[in-house]
Length: 258
Ligand code: ADP
Ligand code: MG
Image (cartoon, rainbow, N blue to C red):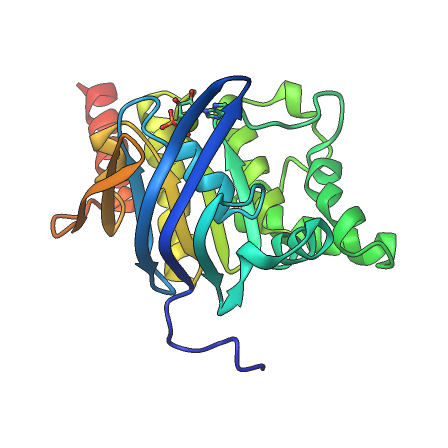
Protein backbone atom coordinates (compact mmCIF):
# COMPACT_ATOMS: atom_id res chain seq x y z
CA UNK A 1 0.00 0.00 0.00
CA UNK A 2 0.93 3.67 -0.02
CA UNK A 3 3.11 5.49 2.43
CA UNK A 4 -0.07 6.60 4.17
CA UNK A 5 -0.06 3.38 6.19
CA UNK A 6 2.63 4.09 8.74
CA UNK A 7 3.04 3.86 12.46
CA UNK A 8 2.57 7.60 12.75
CA UNK A 9 -0.57 8.60 14.64
CA UNK A 10 -3.62 8.32 12.41
CA UNK A 11 -4.81 11.66 13.80
CA UNK A 12 -2.56 14.62 14.63
CA UNK A 13 -4.20 17.79 15.92
CA UNK A 14 -2.19 20.95 16.53
CA UNK A 15 -3.85 23.85 18.29
CA UNK A 16 -7.15 23.04 16.61
CA UNK A 17 -9.86 25.66 17.14
CA UNK A 18 -13.41 26.34 16.01
CA UNK A 19 -15.29 29.57 16.55
CA UNK A 20 -18.93 29.90 15.53
CA UNK A 21 -20.15 33.29 14.49
CA UNK A 22 -23.88 33.76 14.91
CA UNK A 23 -24.80 37.36 14.28
CA UNK A 24 -22.99 39.48 16.85
CA UNK A 25 -22.17 36.53 19.06
CA UNK A 26 -18.96 34.58 18.84
CA UNK A 27 -18.85 31.10 20.40
CA UNK A 28 -15.43 29.56 20.90
CA UNK A 29 -16.57 25.95 20.79
CA UNK A 30 -13.07 24.42 20.53
CA UNK A 31 -10.14 26.49 21.83
CA UNK A 32 -6.84 25.00 20.80
CA UNK A 33 -6.62 21.21 21.04
CA UNK A 34 -3.32 19.41 20.50
CA UNK A 35 -3.76 15.66 20.43
CA UNK A 36 -2.38 12.54 18.70
CA UNK A 37 -4.42 9.38 18.27
CA UNK A 38 -2.62 6.19 17.34
CA UNK A 39 -3.86 3.61 14.91
CA UNK A 40 -5.78 0.93 16.79
CA UNK A 41 -6.68 3.13 19.73
CA UNK A 42 -10.16 3.28 21.23
CA UNK A 43 -10.78 6.73 22.70
CA UNK A 44 -13.71 7.98 24.78
CA UNK A 45 -14.36 11.72 24.63
CA UNK A 46 -16.16 12.93 27.73
CA UNK A 47 -17.25 16.29 29.11
CA UNK A 48 -20.31 18.26 30.09
CA UNK A 49 -22.88 19.36 27.55
CA UNK A 50 -21.53 22.32 25.57
CA UNK A 51 -17.87 21.47 26.17
CA UNK A 52 -17.21 21.09 22.43
CA UNK A 53 -17.30 17.32 21.96
CA UNK A 54 -19.54 17.30 18.90
CA UNK A 55 -17.71 20.23 17.36
CA UNK A 56 -14.45 18.31 17.73
CA UNK A 57 -16.02 15.16 16.28
CA UNK A 58 -17.37 17.09 13.29
CA UNK A 59 -13.86 18.31 12.52
CA UNK A 60 -12.33 14.87 13.07
CA UNK A 61 -14.98 13.46 10.74
CA UNK A 62 -14.19 15.99 8.00
CA UNK A 63 -17.74 17.29 8.23
CA UNK A 64 -16.61 20.73 9.26
CA UNK A 65 -13.40 22.74 8.96
CA UNK A 66 -11.51 24.29 11.86
CA UNK A 67 -11.20 28.05 12.17
CA UNK A 68 -7.49 27.64 12.91
CA UNK A 69 -4.89 25.04 13.71
CA UNK A 70 -4.00 21.91 11.81
CA UNK A 71 -5.43 18.42 11.44
CA UNK A 72 -3.49 15.64 9.79
CA UNK A 73 -5.49 12.51 9.01
CA UNK A 74 -3.12 9.80 7.82
CA UNK A 75 -0.65 12.60 7.15
CA UNK A 76 -3.11 14.43 4.90
CA UNK A 77 -3.64 18.08 5.83
CA UNK A 78 -7.41 18.22 6.24
CA UNK A 79 -7.63 21.93 7.04
CA UNK A 80 -6.53 22.88 3.52
CA UNK A 81 -9.06 20.76 1.63
CA UNK A 82 -12.08 22.02 -0.26
CA UNK A 83 -15.54 20.47 -0.01
CA UNK A 84 -15.07 17.85 -2.70
CA UNK A 85 -11.76 16.53 -1.45
CA UNK A 86 -13.05 16.60 2.08
CA UNK A 87 -16.02 14.43 1.09
CA UNK A 88 -13.75 12.04 -0.76
CA UNK A 89 -11.45 11.65 2.21
CA UNK A 90 -14.42 11.17 4.52
CA UNK A 91 -15.97 8.46 2.34
CA UNK A 92 -12.71 6.62 2.07
CA UNK A 93 -11.53 6.66 5.65
CA UNK A 94 -14.33 7.37 8.10
CA UNK A 95 -17.51 5.67 9.30
CA UNK A 96 -20.09 7.44 11.49
CA UNK A 97 -22.43 6.16 14.18
CA UNK A 98 -24.98 8.43 15.88
CA UNK A 99 -27.11 8.31 19.00
CA UNK A 100 -30.35 8.30 17.03
CA UNK A 101 -29.22 5.65 14.48
CA UNK A 102 -30.33 7.85 11.52
CA UNK A 103 -31.73 4.96 9.48
CA UNK A 104 -34.42 5.12 6.82
CA UNK A 105 -37.54 3.62 8.42
CA UNK A 106 -39.49 1.87 5.68
CA UNK A 107 -36.37 0.50 4.11
CA UNK A 108 -34.68 -2.85 4.60
CA UNK A 109 -31.58 -3.38 6.69
CA UNK A 110 -29.68 -4.35 3.55
CA UNK A 111 -30.68 -1.19 1.67
CA UNK A 112 -29.79 1.05 4.61
CA UNK A 113 -26.32 -0.44 4.77
CA UNK A 114 -25.77 -0.21 1.00
CA UNK A 115 -26.72 3.43 0.86
CA UNK A 116 -23.33 5.10 1.46
CA UNK A 117 -21.87 3.13 -1.45
CA UNK A 118 -24.12 4.91 -3.94
CA UNK A 119 -22.08 8.01 -3.17
CA UNK A 120 -18.65 6.53 -2.56
CA UNK A 121 -18.66 3.83 -5.26
CA UNK A 122 -21.32 4.89 -7.79
CA UNK A 123 -19.97 2.55 -10.44
CA UNK A 124 -20.07 -0.60 -8.34
CA UNK A 125 -22.65 -3.13 -9.52
CA UNK A 126 -25.77 -3.79 -7.48
CA UNK A 127 -24.55 -7.32 -6.90
CA UNK A 128 -21.24 -6.19 -5.40
CA UNK A 129 -22.98 -3.61 -3.26
CA UNK A 130 -25.35 -6.28 -1.96
CA UNK A 131 -22.43 -8.57 -1.23
CA UNK A 132 -20.59 -5.90 0.74
CA UNK A 133 -23.72 -4.94 2.67
CA UNK A 134 -24.38 -8.58 3.47
CA UNK A 135 -20.85 -9.00 4.80
CA UNK A 136 -21.15 -5.90 6.95
CA UNK A 137 -24.46 -7.09 8.42
CA UNK A 138 -22.96 -10.49 9.17
CA UNK A 139 -20.05 -8.75 10.85
CA UNK A 140 -22.46 -7.07 13.30
CA UNK A 141 -24.44 -10.27 13.90
CA UNK A 142 -27.50 -9.38 11.81
CA UNK A 143 -27.05 -11.74 8.87
CA UNK A 144 -30.56 -13.09 9.52
CA UNK A 145 -32.38 -9.74 9.43
CA UNK A 146 -31.49 -8.55 5.95
CA UNK A 147 -34.95 -7.82 4.59
CA UNK A 148 -36.53 -6.58 7.80
CA UNK A 149 -37.57 -2.96 7.74
CA UNK A 150 -35.53 -1.07 10.29
CA UNK A 151 -38.66 0.15 12.10
CA UNK A 152 -39.51 -3.50 12.87
CA UNK A 153 -36.28 -3.99 14.79
CA UNK A 154 -35.20 -3.21 18.36
CA UNK A 155 -33.00 -0.25 19.27
CA UNK A 156 -29.97 -2.50 19.65
CA UNK A 157 -30.58 -4.09 16.26
CA UNK A 158 -31.05 -0.66 14.67
CA UNK A 159 -27.75 0.51 16.11
CA UNK A 160 -26.09 -2.63 14.72
CA UNK A 161 -27.45 -1.77 11.28
CA UNK A 162 -26.06 1.74 11.67
CA UNK A 163 -22.69 0.26 12.59
CA UNK A 164 -22.81 -2.04 9.56
CA UNK A 165 -23.53 1.05 7.44
CA UNK A 166 -20.51 2.76 9.00
CA UNK A 167 -18.38 -0.24 8.02
CA UNK A 168 -19.50 -0.55 4.42
CA UNK A 169 -16.61 1.47 2.99
CA UNK A 170 -14.10 -0.37 5.17
CA UNK A 171 -13.05 2.74 7.11
CA UNK A 172 -9.95 2.82 9.24
CA UNK A 173 -11.59 5.24 11.62
CA UNK A 174 -15.07 5.01 13.17
CA UNK A 175 -16.53 8.03 14.98
CA UNK A 176 -19.48 7.53 17.28
CA UNK A 177 -21.38 10.35 19.03
CA UNK A 178 -23.24 8.94 22.07
CA UNK A 179 -23.91 5.60 20.35
CA UNK A 180 -25.47 4.05 23.47
CA UNK A 181 -27.42 7.16 24.51
CA UNK A 182 -30.76 5.64 23.48
CA UNK A 183 -30.11 2.06 24.62
CA UNK A 184 -30.75 0.14 27.84
CA UNK A 185 -27.86 -1.18 29.93
CA UNK A 186 -27.56 -4.66 28.50
CA UNK A 187 -27.91 -3.51 24.90
CA UNK A 188 -25.29 -0.83 25.56
CA UNK A 189 -22.85 -3.48 26.76
CA UNK A 190 -23.57 -5.54 23.63
CA UNK A 191 -22.85 -2.55 21.41
CA UNK A 192 -19.63 -1.87 23.33
CA UNK A 193 -18.72 -5.53 22.78
CA UNK A 194 -19.17 -5.05 19.07
CA UNK A 195 -16.99 -1.91 19.16
CA UNK A 196 -14.32 -3.80 21.11
CA UNK A 197 -14.37 -6.53 18.44
CA UNK A 198 -14.05 -3.99 15.63
CA UNK A 199 -11.21 -2.34 17.52
CA UNK A 200 -9.44 -5.71 17.88
CA UNK A 201 -9.75 -6.13 14.12
CA UNK A 202 -7.70 -2.93 13.69
CA UNK A 203 -10.26 -0.14 13.40
CA UNK A 204 -9.48 3.04 15.33
CA UNK A 205 -12.51 4.18 17.32
CA UNK A 206 -13.39 7.54 18.83
CA UNK A 207 -16.58 7.71 20.83
CA UNK A 208 -18.35 10.53 22.67
CA UNK A 209 -20.12 9.47 25.82
CA UNK A 210 -21.11 11.15 29.06
CA UNK A 211 -21.35 7.86 30.94
CA UNK A 212 -18.27 6.70 32.84
CA UNK A 213 -19.64 3.14 32.73
CA UNK A 214 -19.45 3.24 28.94
CA UNK A 215 -16.08 5.02 28.73
CA UNK A 216 -14.74 2.17 30.89
CA UNK A 217 -14.74 -0.11 27.79
CA UNK A 218 -12.37 2.22 25.93
CA UNK A 219 -8.57 2.22 26.02
CA UNK A 220 -8.14 5.93 26.57
CA UNK A 221 -10.31 8.64 28.12
CA UNK A 222 -10.08 12.27 27.03
CA UNK A 223 -12.10 14.81 29.02
CA UNK A 224 -13.06 18.22 27.61
CA UNK A 225 -14.18 21.39 29.31
CA UNK A 226 -14.94 24.74 27.67
CA UNK A 227 -13.44 23.66 24.36
CA UNK A 228 -10.20 22.33 25.82
CA UNK A 229 -8.81 18.96 26.82
CA UNK A 230 -8.48 18.94 30.61
CA UNK A 231 -7.42 15.34 31.05
CA UNK A 232 -6.14 12.49 28.89
CA UNK A 233 -5.50 9.10 30.49
CA UNK A 234 -5.01 5.47 29.54
CA UNK A 235 -7.74 3.28 30.98
CA UNK A 236 -5.80 0.67 32.93
CA UNK A 237 -8.90 -1.07 34.27
CA UNK A 238 -10.62 -1.65 30.96
CA UNK A 239 -13.87 -3.60 31.02
CA UNK A 240 -14.47 -6.48 28.65
CA UNK A 241 -18.01 -6.37 27.29
CA UNK A 242 -17.80 -9.95 26.05
CA UNK A 243 -16.99 -11.28 29.55
CA UNK A 244 -19.75 -9.22 31.09
CA UNK A 245 -22.37 -10.50 28.65
CA UNK A 246 -21.37 -14.07 29.48
CA UNK A 247 -21.78 -13.29 33.18
CA UNK A 248 -25.15 -11.59 32.60
CA UNK A 249 -26.33 -14.66 30.69
CA UNK A 250 -25.19 -16.98 33.46
CA UNK A 251 -26.94 -14.90 36.11
CA UNK A 252 -30.12 -14.94 34.03
CA UNK A 253 -29.96 -18.72 33.66
CA UNK A 254 -29.49 -19.12 37.40
CA UNK A 255 -32.44 -16.86 38.14
CA UNK A 256 -34.62 -18.92 35.80
CA UNK A 257 -33.68 -22.19 37.48
CA UNK A 258 -34.11 -20.84 40.99
P1 ADP B 1 -21.08 19.16 23.19
O1 ADP B 1 -21.17 18.22 22.07
O2 ADP B 1 -19.94 18.88 24.12
O3 ADP B 1 -22.37 19.27 23.94
P2 ADP B 1 -20.95 21.21 21.14
O4 ADP B 1 -19.73 20.97 20.36
O5 ADP B 1 -22.24 20.76 20.55
O6 ADP B 1 -20.77 20.62 22.62
O7 ADP B 1 -21.07 22.77 21.44
C1 ADP B 1 -20.02 23.54 21.97
C2 ADP B 1 -20.47 25.02 21.98
O8 ADP B 1 -20.60 25.50 20.64
C3 ADP B 1 -21.80 25.25 22.64
O9 ADP B 1 -21.75 26.48 23.32
C4 ADP B 1 -22.75 25.30 21.47
O10 ADP B 1 -23.87 26.08 21.78
C5 ADP B 1 -21.91 25.93 20.39
N1 ADP B 1 -22.28 25.50 19.04
C6 ADP B 1 -22.26 24.23 18.57
N2 ADP B 1 -22.61 24.18 17.26
C7 ADP B 1 -22.88 25.46 16.91
C8 ADP B 1 -23.29 26.09 15.68
N3 ADP B 1 -23.50 25.35 14.56
N4 ADP B 1 -23.46 27.41 15.69
C9 ADP B 1 -23.25 28.16 16.79
N5 ADP B 1 -22.85 27.63 17.97
C10 ADP B 1 -22.66 26.31 18.03
MG1 MG C 1 -22.74 16.85 21.49
